[in-house]
Image (tube, rainbow, N blue to C red; front, side, top):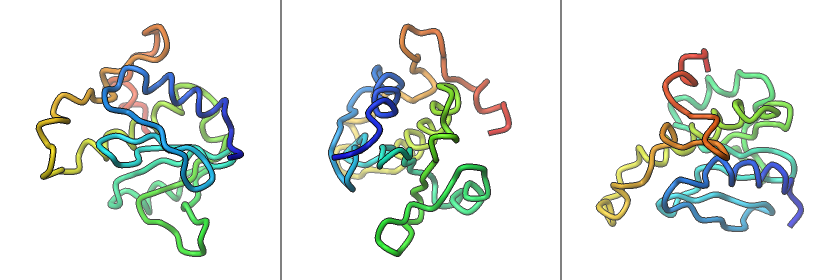
Amino acid sequence: MVYDKKLANRIQKILQNCKGVTEKEMFGGIAFMMKGRMCCGVIKDNLVARVDPNDYEKLLEGKNVLPMDFSGRPMKGFIYVSSMGCKSNKTLAKWVSLGVDYVNSIKDKKNLEVYKNTLRLESLTFCTGQLALNQTLRSTGF
């Protein structure tokens, strides 16, 4: 599998305190899963972020964002963010938080109790706790 391992490592650090995160090789890259659902990943040198389908079109208007399309048919609710679009850890964390928030918003009738204690990304800290993801990130206009 050929994908940007440095980007994958940065995502791992962001998600390190999030309970229930697993990694799975898929789509020729790596996917980060929560509750058995992909929240984000890396394909080649692109971040893949899962987003709320209601926000999909608006997010595609952003710089460095493309529809996830490797089969000739875009997957609504999944976007590619180029390496230029997630250069800083803060920006990468914003994209990852969209995926985590969306997956956490999906009602899972089976096993709901198992995941009730899944940490929200807002409570995660980056690396040694220096970059706290909270409402401040959301108020930056992203």
